[in-house]
Image: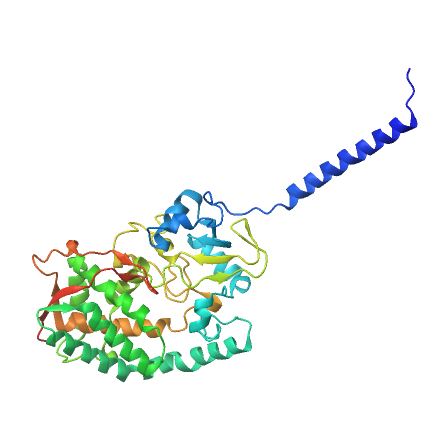
Length: 392
């Protein structure tokens, strides 16, 4: 037999070591590769931004999530962006891993308008400044006691709303009247920009009622029964008594959340959402618009049915992650109940003092329900309705 020379022995040894090293590296690399969420194909430089062209972001993201799942990873330019579109994904984001996702991404435009990200929406959640401002809002400005103390202002502005509608003639731009009222209430009480979100919800509730005469009749009957004989709407008279109208407001929030993607969050620690790895530095959107219309969570999800909340123990505090108009956790909107109080008295006043119909043949199904892009999900067209005064 041929003998192995020392040079061959060294060569074989080196080759074996090389093969083992390569195999170990491949195994190590395979084991450490993150299990990233799925997503569509991307283009160089722009990433997935081309998928968002021509549609509102929350609508485009919902369409993509139907193909790629409720936990989806996009790349918007160079920014890794996670989009969550189910109640369970939102629960893991805002409850299970809330602390790791409590900060905000840094956006230059936001910095300009928020004094370097120092307001309550954008400041770092672990900063002394944010904790102080948050405490001021929840304990002082927007506590239940303080919200009740604003009643005279809300009642005064609701009465002004009624007068402005009465003075407008037969055809009323409801959206413009409501915006003026909400802006006045909130500027006088909390000097906040929250009037936009509150007005938006009220302006979506009215066309939904016009398009659903049965629901309008029930809501209006309840308001007029509770306020029978009154000349104006006082909160003391309606507090806790307009159960159906409260369901109307919740159903409006479900279908038309004013901030459909909420304010984005930033992942600061490695976490898993529904089994997928989320690296630090990832921007995260919770698509509450898609969650509110999820057929797996809601029966007849696209239909306006306030009665669904009769059997659903759903509140605004984030106890049910199918319904998150103001978010939940550390970054929950602190003025949620203040906003709901404004919406309730505005709608009660409009339904008590006026009968409403769509101009022309009165067919509310002709109302344009197209959304427009903006700070909130506004209506694309003006809300022009006929108001017929009702004498109590």
